Image (cartoon, rainbow, N blue to C red; front, side):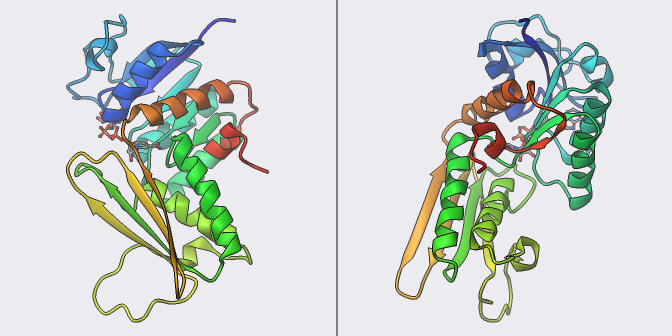
Length: 272
Ligand code: NAD
């Protein structure tokens, strides 16, 4: 079978570079095209050289429509509005669309889900790492066993990150809400930040705190706090290649799926 022709969106970004390197190194995938925003310093450069490997003879463009001609799949770690626009294009062309972008609003998530039901094969997750998805499974289990413990999620990222709490922190908080069951609604129980005279902690809430600094790739801790003990489950990312490896696994998995919106638990077979 011929290789899947992959387009990298946001080629000039940190994850864009990691994804270009990963596509070049993954059997069954070939870099078809790459693009970034108009005016990006990445435009006009060879995608391989830009990402720190040998030339790939693919020049980074700045026009998504041109980049997608002849493509089978898009790997997209960019910005919410870009991911919505690309999901619509993926839906029209029946493409695989791997979305790592975080910080989407409810409306943007809804538009992406709609593109999934209209023809795109989308895998979207706040974190493509195998370890974090394992962590989410553990959080679900602990929350089910200890539903009365207070849950707090702490995350730290590099100083260029633009959204908070991180997509991964939200994913872990949602896993805790799912684990608690009994109709626990994440949105009504999530406390995304705290300041000033907050009053006492409301039982059942799921709290978040975000730290930013330096070049921290991503660290997450989930605390389950009882009256006499505390459990902490921690994940630390040490290389962006881990997210890219998950994205490659997702693209190879999604090519054989019907249209729809999936997450990493589907890809890894973690769903009961
Ligand atoms: P980055 O700022 O280094 O890269 C984003 C790139 O997107 C930039 O090159 C930017 O120019 C480009 N871009 C912006 N608008 C564009 C447009 N209209 N068309 C094409 N390209 C455009 O950021 P990053 O660290 O690579 O992260 C990107 C996104 O991925 C963020 O939302 C981040 O939170 C998320 N992320 C997700 C995971 C995961 O596993 N899901 C892991 C790491 C980062």
